[in-house]
Image 1: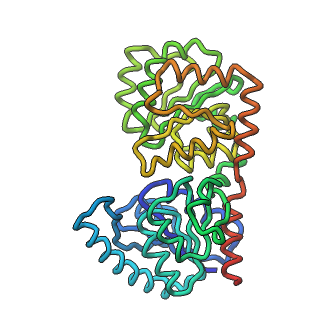
Image 2 (image 1 turned 90 degrees about the horizontal axis):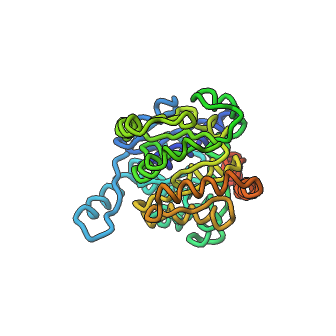
Image 3 (image 1 turned 90 degrees about the vertical axis):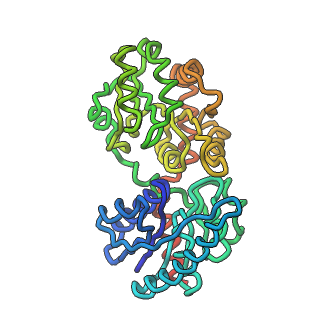
Length: 364
């Protein structure tokens, strides 16, 4: 089978695509991949590094207000469709999947017009403009949240989950803890604001650092590389408690997650897929700076089912953060209920489900 994958712009679109490719490569030997992204996006460096054939087109997104740039975007879209058709024909694609971002627009649309089976993968509980547009043309819409189903044609929607959920399974949590200098016999809270970090979360943690030093649990606090030096200066003044380990970034996050009892994080789709797959309770602080406020809606998909505590950024204080952590970790019944609820929402076989969907479409 020859599979074309397209997705770009953010890690949230690229990493699920790579997780899907890796899972298929484990299962099947006779599969070829072509990844079509943008020439300047993150994918142009990340994908070739994984030894996956990569080609690019030039495309930009629509402005949400009237702008001359939108005329240019339409022209780029049409050119992107022509280029995508050429690439798809040359590769002889059997199926095309778009995992999000502007680049999926011309690629998936071109495939649909050529009669090649098509899927879009929507990771969030609220879709963006590109996937809403493409849903009219594709054969199937794969979603990660039940809440997303309402936005798409009913007959096309399939709940598959996020392939990143499959990648975090089976990791050694003890090894993960030891790799970052954590104890193996003390409850662990992981505080992380995403790969770039989140300033409001950092500020709340710094203000509560002295108090956290008195807790019977340990904390791995990942600042994000952008904020690390600034945080370190503050910590040098306050003092670094023995039970708090501070890192700019963690490269073996799946292993560390496997040894985590509670996570404090943003509510990006990939993060939630990983947490629910492993059944990890969470305190979710959605980023308010995202399209359609989708992170808050993602978080509510967990908090409404008792798998997470939702803490809005405008309500975030160091006092509230510590109270939430204590409330969960000091109550054995509460933490067990949250673990069970998170696990019930997880779709650990998401990558297999997506691949099965591809096979079914190709056979048809």
